[in-house]
Length: 516
Ligand code: SIN
Figure 1 (tube, rainbow, N blue to C red):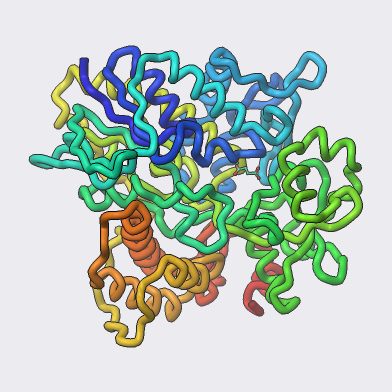
Figure 2: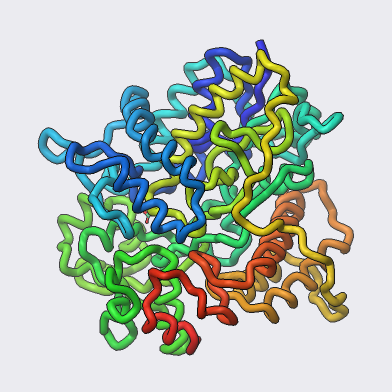
């Protein structure tokens, strides 16, 4: 049987591993313990057309509209039309989505024209999905290597042949495989404020980049509008606003109705920038989420995870406002794949957040990410089976990036007064120059500093320093991609080019942005 190395244990990696275990000898590698991934922390739910009065066409239209014209329509069609089947697979694997009477309970999130979000355990959707998939993978016969870190991919003659891994015993080994599937998730730790768990340091995307795989859409980083400011950027789900909570400024007034007709339920990038502008206008103070109208009993039952976190931070949100601000949440860009998870390097596949399938365009629609992991994880397993019997070199993917090529002429001036590298300094630089708003001067400065740090010798024996190398490689490529796109679109907002801001942003919003 072909040997397949799956790296990452969120919904995408576990779905691929479970499906591939039927025809391949699967080894699942995970950086921490099984079950630690972004999936586990997903709150809002999974979007999919599961109700008779909804339609796949409506889900496609919402996804394309949130993506601000940069989605790959064929990929979106696959996502939305195969999504319901994959949700039913999850149910068959043991995920119990919440019900309202005889129907599934319907959640609403921003930019969905229909309440189509399924959730489990209230706001514990990701944790419930992860638990079910972990239980199934343990029964599957797949070999599982926990606390094992991807150092780099092994290539030979233009093909990926395995990976160098740092094991739990701190020993580096080379692991040979017929195919490697990256399912390593995102890289929220490119920024100092993130809803992502500590494992999200972009290890797969960085290794793929160094192995010569095409990356695309790196400039599109999604900032979630509402992370707790009192407790380590803990996510407060958009579903809370979907249930009626509103955002207020320091004077207690709503402000997002000046920004977009859908106010709190406008696309995520619009809400996040609207909050940032309001924070700038009030001297950096966070805005507040007002969920008081929802009542203590409803909040505890519908959002048990958030309820515990908010109360632990000292706020009784049934009576008090919750201070929130935007935080890095999800990377739309990543390793370019075709509709079956194949990257531009033979033998290398990518699924989930690490991949750039084209489904998210410039801004991901809420709750489409768990769906993407399930749909494209299953597809990658089919491709692995097919590619094991056909000439593998025939499966090379032609790059189809919607971004301009990430490599731009290296015309940045050398920075002589750059501070010494530290993860914290890099994260702050990214927040200041490649965060919610960017401009040419800031990006030029950031690239010069990042290139300077890239030239400094890096110790690569500890996992922390290997992560730093990955974050540095990805910061540099993200900034290069942002420099190469001089106009604002979706999550990539340039303060020096607001004339071409996305059509969904109103004139009022542009005025607000230009003041910050
Ligand atoms: C949320 O619950 O607000 C996050 C959902 C998502 O990122 O899609």
